[in-house]
Length: 408
Figure 1 (cartoon, rainbow, N blue to C red):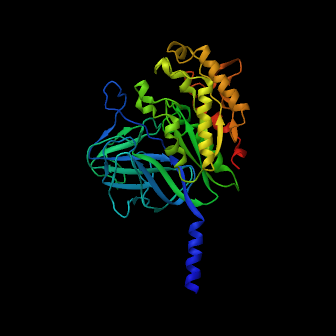
Figure 2: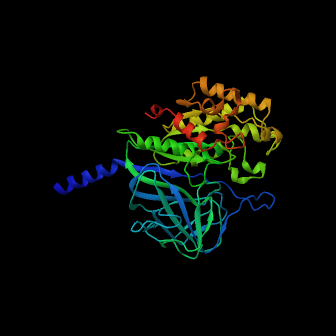
Figure 3: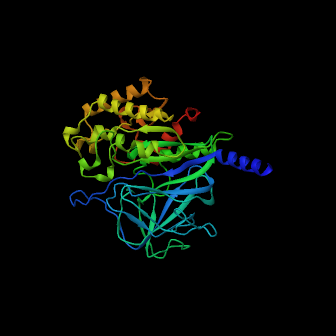
């Protein structure tokens, strides 16, 4: 009888924890069409040591690997996880081999996702983790997040367990790696930040973790006595709600947001909230980097947002809407990304976000970063230089403007 009670107590304890994302990245397609290739990653007999920055911490971890959009299987010959030291180095005593169904190697089928087995490793919140993947054969980088704003490393042969990579090359993408997850109490959940380059942190300082979701994660971590919430960044530069990146000959912009919503939001472990900041490229790309026939109305964008809201609510996920930030500037006017008509579409979408009562909460990013003297412009102090993407200071202001009471 005592043995049965112990088993029941252990089962009850296990039931009180679940997997929650502490970091993530959304993959995008890759094209073999020479006219469309602006960035192509091919690996062969190499170790990739990819660096990620956590939001919440934990003592049991696993990684999520993806061959999304791949047409052939990808072989992973070995994989390791460790706390990151300096550069490509790992902290002594923290290296752990990853297994997949108890085996040290795995083949990821075309288009598939693979989870590693759980590993006992304490990772602190807001820390850097190094995940090393040995790619024994030739592999095209399907399942790639192209613009990471984070330096990762590659070296020849199997160096997945090395304390430091010798003479590595560097790259600023995440290949095959799309998630890092920890076990956490049932009350702990994650916030998926879903959007385009402004969520992805474009033009922020590389290796600085200055994206607005990073600021949000740091603020959440600093709360005393509150339930912990992870932040999983699923922004893709150039992404649109209603059209494909491939139409603009930039497949790295990703598939449309409605198509990727299931994988990048609904399939995330432990997700309780999604913040949506998307639509500026739907407005700007048409007639500039994408066909003019892909022009959208405010009603089109709103309809797409309503779809995402309804699909999230079906899964018990609360949805926070964010207003679209200003983007008038000489370069954007010249390339056809901004016009007075396009500005009206943005204004109409923002008005609906503010007053439409469709979201469970809103964040007025437009109000945070716009120039009060010229509301269609980003404030010069918050401009990275292209009149579209915020600077580090702008991203920081966005992250600090979020009312944490939204996440009850």
